[in-house]
Length: 582
Image 1 (cartoon, rainbow, N blue to C red):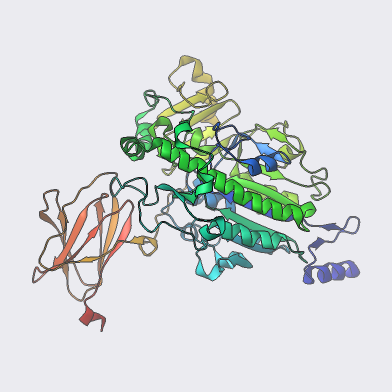
Image 2: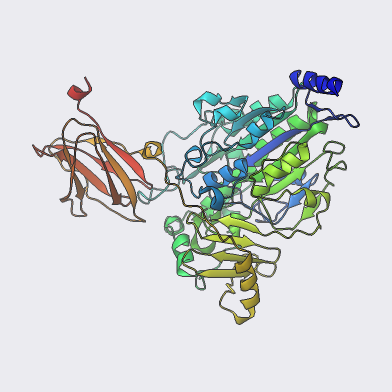
């Protein structure tokens, strides 16, 4: 017994990636974990758009298991990626939307690479894996350097912005734009640099088992990629999204309509940029696929091809006009359904010795929440006790196996979610309104069956199996919010407010030694007082995108400066004077 323990300790200390059993010594597999941002079903093997070009995603699908009914835990980058990497569902963690901070909501939760590190693996990553931060303590190595907490290498950007889509107002995300760039892949940088770095890791032999994370950012906006990726999609031939239907919102409840009509699609149509936007998205998918090809080629030609599990996933899909919506964030299938491919070589995973049969298709309703427990199972690691999703191992063993689970996608508001089954999908909003679709007959969700008498039994079943508890949404700290730009003033007034969109909070922080007065500039450019803010104090004020807020000295009434409110909650720091700083 002592001899066996000594042998185990020597192997672990040498980093030999070995779990020692008396009867069956086994080398643990490597894991290549590939995330592609904002990718819907517009890939060849899922058939989402007839013109898409994704030969590398398709070749990976042809040698593994393709899940054709996979869904994200949340239809936004931050809550989805946080759920995938921690294994915690949004309704359990309280992590619902992009404005929150993962480490404020789940300060102690271990993420996948750290769990693997604690069991003998070396974890290396590159690109966007979590939401705009790296979580440096969870990795052994990262590119760019982990201590920067910035997962993006330098990426070429046009010197003059916007290029194609004029800004419609303060509500518009600044990166909503597209253009063909006259640069090479290497000059472009970004995902090319990420895949170059990951490819170098895959091309080397390693003494201990490896967890490699690879985050490919496109087709996330802006849809700027080298022009050669636009060339297969001439604008004259662009086909509009097959899921688009005029008046598709007629049978959608008010909560769904509000979520759909977010100004983007109307603005894009008004500027006659719909086909150009579709072209930019197709080009960006084609580019992302080419970058994936570089990674797969490095794996296939290197020393790790036969001992590496490959998982490819996207954090959520994207609507390009379906239901009058542009972006993500909704509960419809165009956003919740994501590519998911798992490839396991033969004789690598003890629980799956035959590996994944090439070209297997599984239509069970699965969720990305299952990735953490699935990888733990495949690699023979101790489980993480609070993972909220079931392992996919039964389906990897047999794609037709009984799967009693439905797939839940949580929207930004607690108690709003969608539920995906094999044949139907259900959407529930926090106000109690509902949608129900027969996805095998109506894959684009054109006909809401929720009001039909024939749907009563189905609705009852979906309600019965829907989530019953919802963690409170944890607000982000003020310090973590974006900072509004300060515009100094002399005697002139700031511009008039042009408020539009949903209200939210902006937090005004007075860094001066004296009190200031906060004034809203109405649409006629007249200041309206909202009270004073004492020195060193904070005032939280509800406002809307496009609002202008002026500050003046409370005693002298001298104008100091103003803030223009953007598209999200923020902090507005009223700076100290130069004399006060000294």
